[in-house]
Length: 167
Image (cartoon, rainbow, N blue to C red):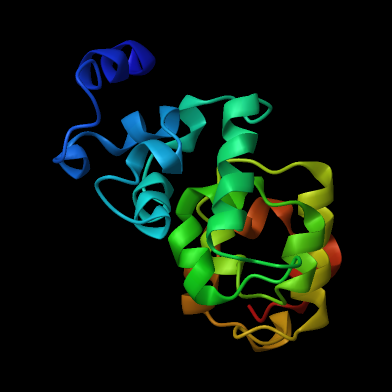
């Protein structure tokens, strides 16, 4: 339905008020399509607010969006800072374990909004949390507030991490 709607909306070119359309519609555009109405980073800020789950995780379009976002943000390696994580929005849910490990905790809060994880992502999240080198500190120093901030990651935590969290 969204791709059909996009065809109708863009029948006579990309509308100048594209930002006023539902964000999910942008999942079917590329940054070059959007160039007339804004920058690629603005495009990915809007895409990051979309429900990426409209596209299956394995969908080539969803994988292409992540690659285009990383190129747009000029992220040379696998380390993503908090500012870029904010721009990526829901696209952080598709980052592999190497990005999660290299980003040393700057992705945890964003990852907590993801619905599910692949096994390598889960392992990377546990590694980062176990290291204690995050803005949240080691699990032994966590509070109820920390748990609420990371609530979406609780299913990923293993017994060893859960035991460290104060009652």
